[in-house]
Image (tube, rainbow, N blue to C red; front, side):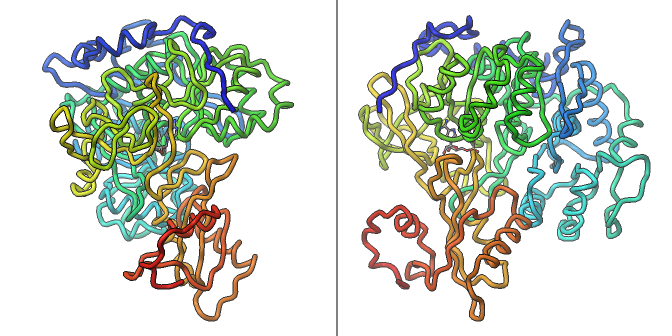
Length: 590
Ligand code: WTA
């Protein structure tokens, strides 16, 4: 089906970026740095830009954060409050002898302390790392061990999971618990680290702090993300990312100080950091944070009550909302003036739904943990072709290339690649130079030597320069927008006593984009059954994460393997999709 283009004149707003084409052709990153506060010595600090630069302006007394907890109780913080509390947190870290470059990890649900500790860490110049509260034991241990995190901030509930792994973490020196009153003893304490009370520490800390003066390349935060092979890798970002974090928030999400902005993403993944903490506050807007889970009634009532004007969410959430039109009818959504979506392909039907039911187009945009900010987008000042991710951000050159790095003609399918440098590009992969290098391809083309950054995604560009996503070029699974590596799931599975071997794939799913499906060969003496499936699912959730368990399990006598013993996920996937498995002569079993 062909979906008609949505003309830009149909947008309700005067955008921050009035003319995309013009901006693209005249763009200069150096010029754009004027939007950012640099200290007199030429250094900067991303947290200073998110918060402290508003000190002494009218923004200081304006609401920065409206926090709605799991019971729909609300708490508000103005910019001044956040400036003081992040200062207290930075001072707390200092008092614990944490220094620039040390890793400080947050294992927290979406609560104000997460936002405060994150930015307080940046102020000091330490590296902040966020961990999904849904992470299980193994996921937690892998990340804390690899990063050699020195401090962990968590809640008393999550502390139980931390206690299971803390003895495996020789570098972890301090655990701070957000909801401990005074010096209450903690459950499961003992061992080398006595947990500290967040409130105790904060109450003793000064509200004054001078942000560390840092180079653009100084690390700011790190996030673990999945590839095809091996355990998740630590992607390192830097303070200089702020220019692109700020500008994409302004030009793509169209954030203005008078907006009520809601990004539904969790800071355990990159959208929740860049567009749920740093970018919006750098633009002086009011942000909503909802600590609870997805629920159509709750979500719509938040929008209605707080008159949310910009809503940034994920395709799976939109698809879920689309299945319940009767709920939408109960609410007044007229406050929303701009909608955007990220993380997985946004199907054209969702855009049509937005137009019909909210009288708004949904602006799809594309990026990755590694790119650090949106790199391809639909802009308010540009026509939308439903199903397309849009065009590259000014200052970014995107192309579709072949395996040799030669640019392909319009409409030809190939690798989505970016010219290899832009301000928010990852600075390194923690402790893995080889992996970092593997993202880049040097090519000799008609215009001489080109350096490409490879996204790992396949796509095409049309004759008008719009990019279209086709799929991953590797085995990475995107389920409900979350990025999951099959290897991580397979390792969690084989830790189960019944399982001899496991191969994991993403199986296409209308609602979630993909679901995780595991093919399992059992150890001798075990029988496949529904009860065992259920037990395996629970086991994986506990080890890994609530979202990273296989929703489907199939027991097999044998799994397809190469002669060197590697399970061939490609074959499992093709069989699942009923496709021709091609040449399988290199396979040993089968
Ligand atoms: C996918 C998320 C289609 C893609 C910000 C990419 C998308 C991976 C889109 C990165 C989109 C992201 N359309 N696919 N608009 N946006 N992706 O690191 O495969 O969690 O490589 O960052 O998500 O996922 P990550």
